[in-house]
Length: 317
Image (cartoon, rainbow, N blue to C red; front, side, top):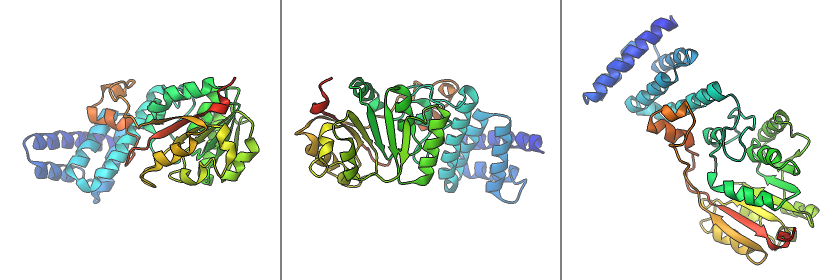
């Protein structure tokens, strides 16, 4: 049955494409509806088509099916884009296995499972590429401890523990599911002994680390306004800080946070940068431009710059 469905589906896609090229989208939509009506529900029919194509690892055909679905049926467009992203994930896993392919965390065992946000840029290693040179510079300052507030699934917590084998990472998140994912990722990558997990982190907790060489990595969706305040939490004056800034929470967030740290830190604001969709590994490199763009899209509604703030107290070796 699946072989018959697959043959019918391919015929439907070809006919639908011909109708689209002829400027007849309604006819193309009807073509797909009729040929895929092997079950009464159209969406279920497309799900069966997806399964048949996926079982044969017919990734280009499956991506094309979702492209046409989005074009022909706008009501399914959002779901089609999400399913296309999942196909790209399957392509990468099929070709390269569960590991990060590039960037500072290249080689980390990672199957694309995330607690929030995008997964393809993480798998490719181009996620937040604007930070890569700054991570190298921060590592050269030899922190002994990283406090990762808002660790999510552990991409940074585990990635930094692997890249800097001398460091201990305190990974914090208020989401129990995220902590479970981080725990699993740390164990899979052999760094569970250096990734110490905990839930909520309050500003007063910084005092316990005063006098040590600390890097704070902070991504807490706007709550950085409350946490990153060296006047209230003086230990911060001696720590390096890498913080994602969220203007949606407060339009002047960048000026507010960096202004607090300028008396004690060297400060840079790093804008969001779109990765190069042309420089992708096989098999993604051979895909349509729209799929290459989807692969590097970080799903941000608005730009979220980063503050890189190095403590002058840590400038000495």
